[in-house]
Image 1 (cartoon, helix red, strand yellow):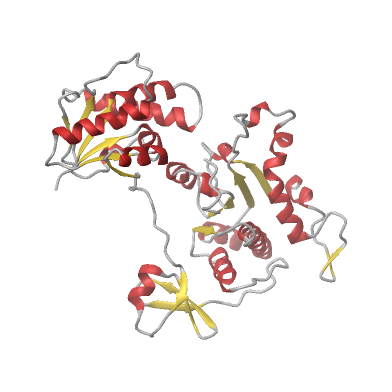
Image 2 (cartoon, rainbow, N blue to C red):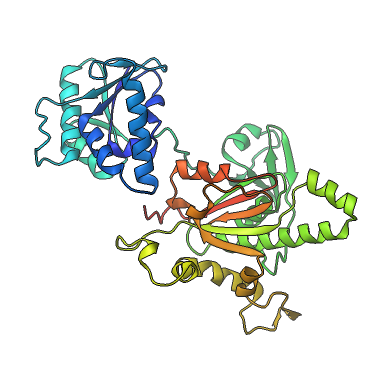
Amino acid sequence: MKKIYVLDTNVLVHDPECIFKFEDNDIVIPITVVEELDKLKKGHGDIPYSARSALRIIDALREKGNISKGINLDTGGTLVVAIDKNYDPCSPVLMDNRIIALAIELSKKKKKTPVILVSKDTAVRIKAEALGVEVQDYRHDKTYLFQKYGLIKEDSDYENGIRSLRYIKRGEEIYRLIGDKTIEQVKRWKNIMGINPKNDEQLCALDALLNDRIDVVALTGKAGTGKTLLALAAGMYLLERSMARIQSLRNQQREQEIANGRYFEQILVARPVIPIVGQDIGFLPGDVEEKLGPWMQPIYDNLDVIIGSPTDTKKEGKPVKYKSSRYLIDSGIIQIEPLTYIRGRSLPHRYIIVDEAQNLRPLDVKTIITRCGEGTKIIFTGDLYQIDT
């Protein structure tokens, strides 16, 4: 059955192309949403950029017909910019309430067609549903969590493995599922830059981090589960292995290895800078490095765990190879920077760690991945229960 979707402003900001992602259903954008997008379009950053993009898309569609009566979309649906009967641009009524009012009005007019208000605002969904409006979150780009690790019951039980598992355990051994039939035993990784997995989940994480055939890894877990530590340790291990391999080859072999295989030149660690009490990083005193200090301290802490503190001369009875986390950064082995600096760059042969990735929008993740050049591996780490944005 065809449906009518009323879109809240935050949906268009979240995904400016969402208009084309509701199949053959009809889309209604309240005039209030256009006004809010107009207010949000000024300035720099993700939100103004998305607001401008959404307005440009609506404007391009407007030229194809009468937007107040309905414009045919390639998806088979229509797009309408609608005004509710009590619309007053000078009204002090909350924008959210005006959007809900339009959804209620449409529900009364279109009794045989389901009218659904789509919003990423929890409060709007609660209010609208309390007023009898059908609501839902924007679900197009959502990936539902599934169990990535578990028990395989029978040798032939591949169907469950493909759909819900990537790593399976049988007895004391863990296996990696590849495709629809292939399984490979996971190596019992130990002493990766002095770090050993403490449980099966960390072992599976290390396997993915160290696997040359896996270009993108997402590590999720609660605070203290070792996501960033494992990612850094694996990155340093792979970087050392790459450099040793390249240096051991003759010139011609080295060129061939560089041309054909993955190797890493540097570890790049990026974190989104979340403003505190409305103050962006630019308001803080000092140069870029001093401004970033508070946000990047968790990275330094994890590096110190791997290489030892600056006062250590030995770790596990062996001489410390790197003097300090500061040495790793000053020598260019590891580069740490805010996530916004990655945009517009091309990053080949890097081991990239995006920390606190739970604060990113799907559009941000896509943008970051497109920055990855040849031979780059990217790791996203985050805690889905600590979303700040």
